[in-house]
Image 1 (tube, helix red, strand yellow):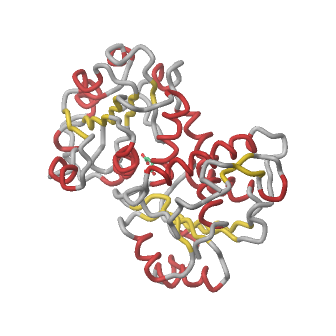
Image 2 (tube, helix red, strand yellow; image 1 turned 60 degrees about the vertical axis):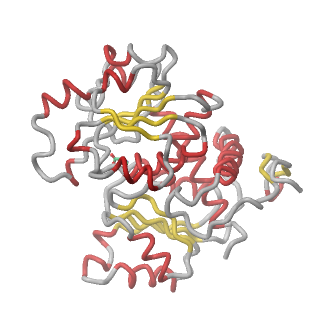
Length: 336
Ligand code: ASP
């Protein structure tokens, strides 16, 4: 059966899902740098089926019945954690949610020992968020259990990248020739980085716009070395936003910043806030996206955040479908 042929949702729930997972090649989900276009298309195809389940009165299927999924978050989170946990429950899995501050890590246990404990408890998949870049990679190296990265330091946030691209595709259709502008704290943004990797096979142009101090040193060289030829850097927002199809401001991540990166908040707002005047330079049908949480009045003003072009709440809703698709592939998948 080819990848595009479909069959009924397992256990006869009637939802159409791809029958074949031939293109799928992941035991863990750590970032999007190793995702092929076919794999991303597969995730989106499965997510379309999940959207159908989410529209039902009873949002529950038994696909992951008997599987146990743990979340272990060492940083605050609302959307990512809630949507992974709901995704697991909607698929019928049992869930355990560990608050790192209240776990044995707070008593001095190492990260790996804590994760090994979950493994010994027969957890099938661990979803981890950690302030240190690379922590989920370390976990994947030391454990047999499957690992999903829910955000590691400034490095990667693959499920966010996927839900962002899925939302763009649903709204705009084909992304070929489109222009995406990502604005603000690029330096600390794992969301920006995962979006760069995720969009590389979509024939889309990505412009990163920020003051020089919020662009990582050597970024241009890095994009060239990585073959991310669709990415460019622009410091002037009025220039960057001209003719944009997708406008994505980012939160200033004060918790990760050393002091002195921006000269004053007033100046930053004047030069980099996305407001109606700025948006008038984008394409008439341009969409607004934001990974959340928003700092309203700083990187985005109220009218833009809640205006008719805003897909910010849609991103949150789509996040559940994308995470259901990822759990279906990882927790229920063929790769052990
Ligand atoms: N929620 C996103 C993240 O965890 C973006 C942010 O925190 O600003 O990376």
